[in-house]
Structure formats: structure tokens, C-alpha cells
Length: 307
Ligand code: FAD
Image (cartoon, rainbow, N blue to C red; front, side, top):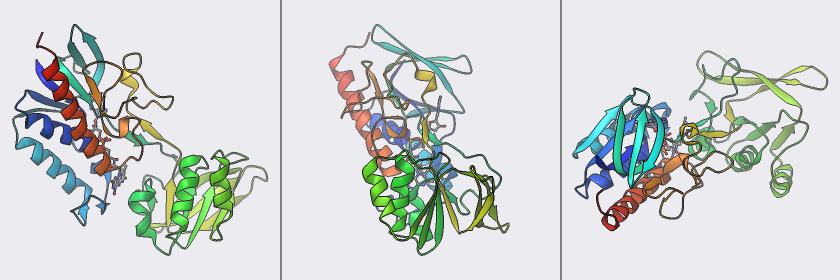
């Protein structure tokens, strides 16, 4: 059995594996796609000490760093369930294999919910973006839309309004769902327009990059085109935690509830990164949390005897 088994190979999992392996304990990483969301990222400019890099390059560097240590890397493996018994945790993989470990770090990350309209997929990273903290500065002085009027959409619109030229917020419902204080702030901004009852039907482009957004007014039935350079889709971040239902405590959003040490509700099971309740889903935060979870797992191991 492993001492530490990491499930998920994004920035959180990679950091956890390096920290665990450096304690000289048996460490494994099982992940579906090593690198995680970073693989789908074009430019990364906010990982401190690396001024600028590209997602796939960063993902490769994560794996290289882990391979530098004696870590059992199991790629293309999807975890299906977790069971804990007598101080031993068992992870069952889709392949049918079962892995046993004295402690587990879950770092299965999250995915942005897609709007699924024509143009979204085609123009991903070519004007279609999901993370205002990451990609906001790329649209300095330009026109963007934010799709979604919940807290994350309205926060994104407020954030972007300080950087870009103009923000159009598109909300499907007849009202915004964000907190009142955010709505007041939003409506006070001069370079923001808000469209309610607006259903996004298409993101248009010139073949290279985004040049507009088409929405249907759900009251009049009329279609409108907004010329712009960027679209931020803010209709939810979904944690990859379905496989954990009924085992560790999840928040109402499906995030794994962790304490300040990364401990979950189940002894010996820790979690880190976008899959958890820790706020602000960013690479540097996920990596820091992964390191923390590994140190907590080590702390757990030295306090419990091997069964
Ligand atoms: P993830 O990166 O999501 O990794 C999860 C890992 O778990 C993957 O290996 C996945 O295959 C695996 N996995 C999932 N389910 C299972 C399962 N059941 N069994 C086994 N393995 C599983 N952040 C920044 O800081 N700067 C940026 O510029 C930036 N740009 C971004 C651009 C885009 C397009 C996107 C989508 C995100 C961006 N982010 C950026 C956010 C950043 O990528 C995430 O915060 C970060 O990757 C989270 O790391 P993580 O390790 O928690 O999860």
C-alpha cells in the first residue's frame, strides 16, 4: 500500500506529490489527465516567479518535477469511489483496479460550465474566456461581455470594468441573482450595460478570433448582436467530486469541505485545489494547498501506526 496516494494530477496534485515524496514515504499519483486545467490554458502570467508561460509547457514542467522523485505515476486513471476501513483507504479506479493507501489527497479539480452555443468551443482562448483573474488583462481597453448574472458573473463584470473599455453583462433570467451590494456596485459603473431576459445564442468570430455575441431578447423574441472582442462565460464552476458523494462531506456546490490544514471529514483523507471549499481557484493557490495537504498527510502518518 501507499503512504500517500494523490488522486488528480493538476497543480494541486503535483505539488502534493513532490512534498510527500520529499518525506521519503511511498507516494503515488493517479490521474485522468496529468496537468489538469492547465493543459487547456494558453497564457499563464500570474504564477509568481514565472513572468509568462504557456499552459501545456507548464503542465509538462509539473510532470517533470514529479518524475524527478520516486513517485508512482498512474496516468489515464479515473477514480470511481473511495472507501475507508480500519485506517486504510481504498480507491477504486474505473479500470477495476483498487489502490490502498494510509492517506489520500484528493485534488480532482473542477471544470467551468460551458454555455454550449455555436462559437464557444471554436473560439476558446481566442476571445472566449472563463477566468477574469487570468485573462482580464488580455482585454485591456477592449469590449467584452460577461455571460451570467450570479455572484461570479457580477464580480467578474465589476473586476473587468476596471481594465477593459466596456462590459456587457448578459443574464438569462429576468433579474440578477448576485448579492444586492454587488448589483449596486455594478449599476454604478459607467462602462457597463446589463441585459436581462437575454439568451445567448451565438458567439461570432472572423475565423481567427471573437468579434461579437448574439443574444435573443426572451420577451420580444428579437435577436441582437453586440460587437466585441471577448466573452467571459461565468455560469458556474463544477467540482469533479461526483464520485465522492456519500463519503466525504461536500458543500452545497459540491466542493469538498476542508479545514485550514486540508483535512476532510474523513480521517486520513485530505483535499486540495479547485475541488475544495478553498476560495479563489488559481494555479498558485491550488499548488500551495497541495503542498499543505501533503504536510498534513505526513503529520497524520506519524501519529498513526501502519495497520
Ligand atoms: P485541475 O487543474 O482541475 O486538475 C485536476 C486533476 O484531476 C486532473 O489531472 C484531472 O484529470 C484529474 N481528475 C479529475 N477527476 C478525476 C477522477 N475522478 N479520477 C482521477 N483523476 C481525476 N489559473 C491561474 O492561476 N492562472 C491562469 O492564467 C489560469 N488560466 C486558466 C485558463 C483556463 C482556460 C482554465 C480552465 C483555468 C485557468 N486557471 C488559471 C485556473 C487553474 O487552471 C486552476 O485553478 C488549477 O488548474 C486548479 O488546479 P487543481 O490541481 O486543483 O485542479
